[in-house]
Image (cartoon, rainbow, N blue to C red; front, side):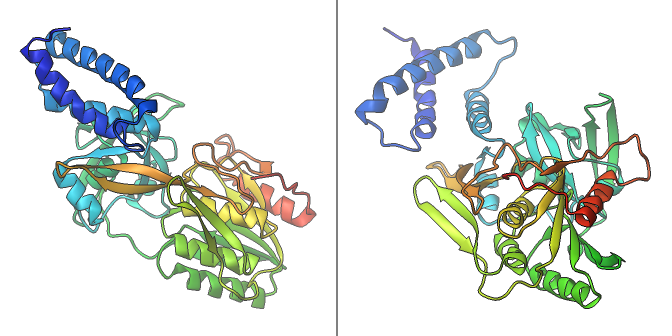
Length: 389
């Protein structure tokens, strides 16, 4: 087949796609060559048709970046193509500024979606909630932003303003919100004796140094006579794996807390440090759709190894490990390269953890925390059934 000059140009550009398609293999392996060539040929045909028939003139770079983004997001909501400038910042773990609005994001149906609005942050105070879709950030469509990019767009200098447009599934009404960025304070962590023998511990996340705060809080509750504990992990997220492993150990003692299954590097176990558990009493763990990240690691470990009963709603399902990988041109990608497994070997990425006792947070009962009430009921009656996570 003879291609005209445009097709030759597009074919050479589309060759860049091969680098992505063949990330997991070596170019030329006989098993993959024929299928890869077929897909590449089809891709070139689509590229040619779009380039020459779309209603507006387009440039090849825009088309190719769109192809990269679509391919990566189709694999995993956290997959992302990064330009040269973005890759430099992402590889150094740089932020757009010290302040943000407290929203943990993912992608769904092409747009950014709120996983959780952390308690006490500007986003939570403005009424943003799990499941809200963010259509725009400062008038820029999130359809064209990966999760890393969208998160960066929410960050900036303290006191500066960011405007977001959200839509909530139940009412389908768009709402514009002006949020003032704020430097995050210490992780929300509070505890109290609710009644004789029953303690409530609210853990809003886990960051460096928080495990020691949790240990002291558990010890204080024990001194106050608590032997039943309601651990509240709802709308809570975190990214510090080591802290989560330490906290799990306070309930489980020395054991495997989580395994990272890596396709290339194999499995890597994370174990709680040696030592007797800080807490050995009855345990109920409250979870919901905003429970994500290391909070899911903690919930899974406490469920399987710490005797905990999960009460509430299915968790979000953040159970993968991302890596920033460079490309020859200085740009790069964020790609999921591993998955978290519970002590029993079960994964929750994309599906979440199922509670043992399901209890929705009904909006028909304003002022009442039905999940808290259900958790207390399970603690008092000991009626929780431990299903698999």
